[in-house]
Length: 71
Figure 1 (tube, rainbow, N blue to C red):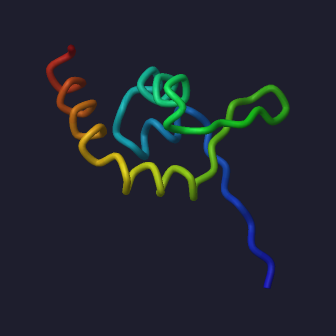
Figure 2: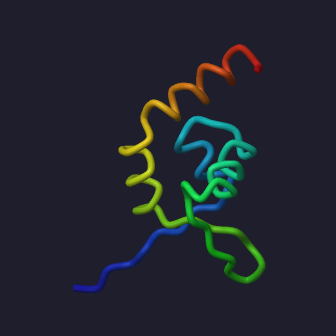
């Protein structure tokens, strides 16, 4: 059985996490998310994003709340 890894752009990752693309860049800068460059585009693996989502629920909740009131 062949498996493939789905890669997401920053914008897609932001939509999936319900945060801004800038927040995703911040998570990458802080070392909380790891991105790769493929053909000059920054991408994240879907599996890594799921892991991040499950392990940083409080952080994501704060980001969503801040986004809602435009901090």
